[in-house]
Image (cartoon, rainbow, N blue to C red; front, side):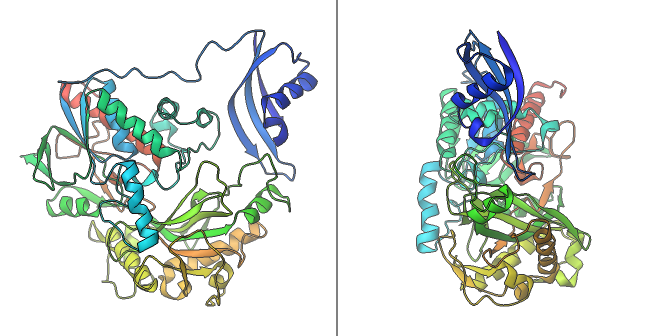
Length: 533
């Protein structure tokens, strides 16, 4: 017999099956001897009141054992000799496009400018130790994309665009914890995601696909208005329809597309800083307990959003129990991002704190970057150029290294230089700097007002124990490569499928993976001449 219950329990009850059995015995009148298994299929934390509860949806098996798996693995066929599709980029968009192509009986050829996920880790260490950024192997470029060594969060609002459950099941099939199928805000962790990515690569290779590392696409190969392949930095030609999943930092690709009159449009982004608090402070604030999270709760999360002078100000990519990392992808850049290990056990919590920016805002003089060329928003690459200008200015403020300029949060709001800085997770080091002075006032004034609003809503949030680390600019792609809404092909170039975050159609691991699957399906329709579903 199977019974399902929706439960609202204390964290210690939700912590293990034994405590759940006792709760079901007392509250639901079940015999603990009859309960042979409990399967949790939804879990979320409700910390809105002073007493924190865990909401659970559970399936209780009485005198029988579960006979169905928690997810259904996909049987991937062998695709040797099948028509090839070129997948440019091995981030989540590219990898899930490749897996879906295999499901559909097509052979993916994945080309990735960076290194494999293990070799890439060595280059990331060099950024912190030697202040050296490899322009082809960094936090943005390499197997797994920007998410592989940033965080591994799998929460998305993109349910209307695809099957989220399938994406999570594929991750589980390749080694992720089955907890991601249950948690309201699933998270793999940057320490465990590389192994999952390696397993996805093995599936692609075992099925007859190809994966080529340190292979940069330098040009699309065209015959009239049809894409027939790509040419790489080594001069090699790969023939086939092209799924372009380069990620949001492949600025050389955007430049090539613009120079070759491939239709794109400027897209809004959000720009700001990484804000880092002591994790215990956030735990105390969110769980309403001066002792913090205790033994049974995870590191606390927060999400803030408001409007200041007609533009959104909000938290982005919150990393509880995480680290701030250097995310530049080339010389003379300083960019920061956040990551969390699976344990979320560090003594800090951070998030991006950013201000919404539209292409037309670039004509606003308060958005000018000191030393940067004036931008009007009339060029398709102007938003990208603004990113570059701000990242270069930040690099200059950080002594032309990866040492990041930083300021205590309350000092920023009161326009005072911080006499000293708190201990931070940012490994290359921090340098006290007046962010309120050199950041464009369009951004800094809105951030300061947003912080004051958030501080009124969450007591203790606005504090000098928190440090702002500059700058966060890679929140999304600065352009959109325009594609047809039905066929997902570029609006003019047949056989080109702009994909994922780099093409302006996703924002995070799961939404990029969903878009990768959709582009694979569209490519299959293109090759077979069938109608898109």
